[in-house]
Length: 221
Image 1 (cartoon, rainbow, N blue to C red):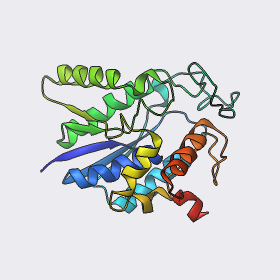
Image 2: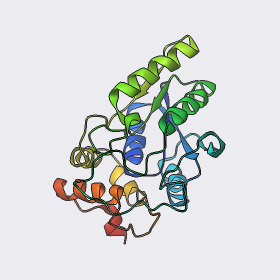
Image 3: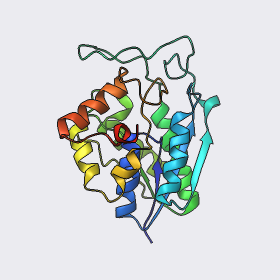
Image 4: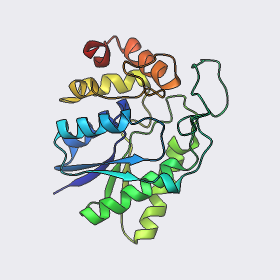
């Protein structure tokens, strides 16, 4: 039996990866992280979608004490701001080493569950400018985990080289994915309906618009 664990935030990309995993693995579990984020909307979305997808296990793991950051996602005094296409440099929503922590903890859970594979929705094409969403980082992280285990281990990144438009078109071809996306949450401000102004909201809107598909969240609203 092929098994994998999906790093699952409840957002657009991780929902797409969860449903991709359901098509490609016989047994799928999900792991969601509480890392000190200011809102619980994504975690609530992750619980809802995990139940909808029928995953074998859904673990919600608190790693707040492991990550410290002056990030707009975790610091009450900072605001994610309004997205600008002309913005340069690393956004204030970056949490240093967040994906490294997530992947190592997810690998631990995966191995304990009898799996040698973690799936994550990172992409180096979405313009986020996060160093821990690049293919080079994932390859290095996979190698480090395999060395630490003394065994083969895989980190799958189905969206790594896809634009937001391509991600939307990809999701459309996966059974059940578009239906699940109506319950996903990506707004950095934790708003429902989404604020439509933050980096995550704008990229999501651009992806659906360029794909010529109405975002299921809009249909739901």
